[in-house]
Length: 137
Image 1 (cartoon, one colour):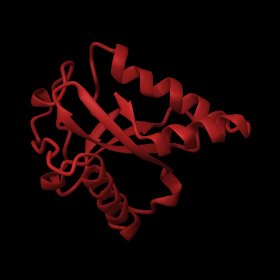
Image 2: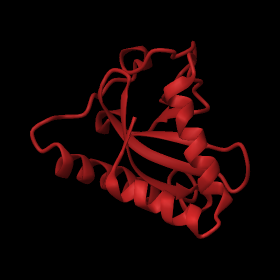
Image 3: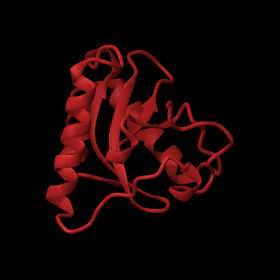
Image 4: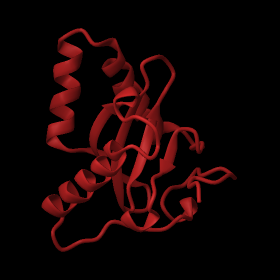
């Protein structure tokens, strides 16, 4: 897993300010690296799947946090931003579309000639995908 410079700085800044949820978020991101099984409640593809944007769900405690990112290759996730879930609103709220658009924009800035992987088959993106849908169609 890679974090953008901006996301890494945001996490460090929030931890330094005493935000325990961002300290827990940092620990939770390690789950992608060390767990042999990744559950659909931890990692979910956002709609539309053609955008290739996924969210990591840090929801062990309240308030929950979402981390947005994309896959350049199997078992490699680029995390780009984090938002408190409550700030995003319902699933049809424009804030979700904004985060997807921002992730795509950040991707193009980082990798202008390389597209993110776009598939609804989680097994093609990361080892440890357990049975279940990682995308709600």
